[in-house]
Length: 157
Image (cartoon, rainbow, N blue to C red):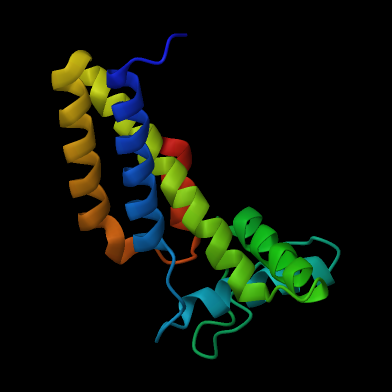
């Protein structure tokens, strides 16, 4: 593959898009308790030989109601990642947030490639893909929390 000025520009532009998306997704936890709930549920699953809870074990008002935890796999993975980060002195949440930022970046780069192709390819499709990817990342930045939907969106793209 020959490196033409157009290809070099494309690499620079997509690298810039990746950096922008990564910066949008790489932020610490703020006032949110849902992530802790997912982490604690993953811990409970690991500590109980990977059995799934049949009711909401952390709820006082609905502890007796049957409940299907449809996010168990990601919760377990989050807890194992957290535990690995703590064991290697990286920091559990720091590692989860870093992995989440890479996952969000990969999601939007894939989305950008699909958008570029869908727009017809070539220079026009390239710039449309870049523009729409940056708009989508800017609009979606409010949903970049380390929660199971981040992984779901990656697999939907």
